Length: 125
Image (cartoon, rainbow, N blue to C red):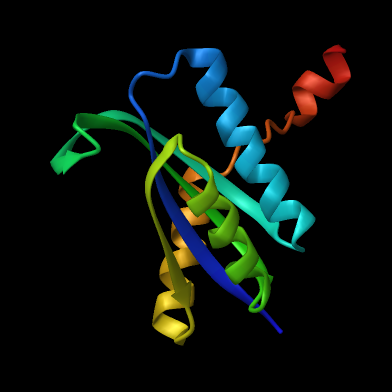
């Protein structure tokens, strides 16, 4: 049975832009390999941590919104624990109708925008 999830992750602040994108793509591949359908990604950027983690005071935050089978979450979290570049992560499951509505609003807000052409633009092209 698939459910709706949110996966918040914090990466080390010492990673350069290419490494950050590589780690985000790595996490995306793990999710998709375990049957997840990614609905949206929210890049929150570098922020101050509430407390020091592995001597870091800052971290790069990101959130994946996805639907996945319930048994795949264990494998995804196992892979995140193995990787040294992920400082923290948290998976939230959305079950109740009110929670699912909130998840849908978040997905609408952070999903990539698809541009639709108006009738005038179509005739001009």
